[in-house]
Length: 184
Ligand code: XMP
Ligand code: MG
Image (cartoon, rainbow, N blue to C red; front, side):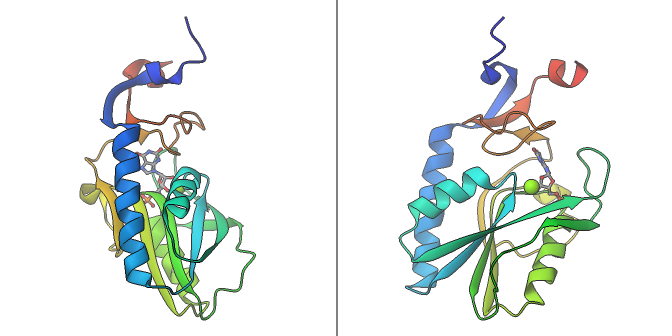
């Protein structure tokens, strides 16, 4: 058994690394065009957005800066409650800036709607959201996500920053986990 090979735990690949990279390039082009030379402050939400942030920022040609927030959503395991605690706040003053929140995935939208509300109160010039994945069927809190990588079915997915129990973030492909992973 090859314990190091995490790719073996994916039962169904939804998006290959190439598909993800292709979409990232398209999103970056769109964002560059929309901001037209205005400097953007990308705010990555730790930990899941690390991969998206890394690839999206390098695919962009705009001048940009980056900052990070870590938040924890109270709730059981894979379900989000909308009650959010800030574990690590920004190091930047965002007032007057063009803020683009970079998220891995929007599920119910509860976490993101809290975040947008919180950041908006700090007086940015503009605030928008880019998320690599979105589950439209799961959304209960209406959040406007301007840049969406892919809409996906209401299933738990891992890879490209997304984890199950902290694992699988390093998978290049994105997919669903084999049942034996949960069963173990
Ligand atoms: P809400 O429901 O507030 O939740 O939009 C967003 C956060 O929940 C996590 N999440 C997932 N993580 N695979 C994951 O690895 C998934 O399919 C998934 N769905 C939600 C994630 O942390 C996201 O930021
Ligand atoms: Mg997350």
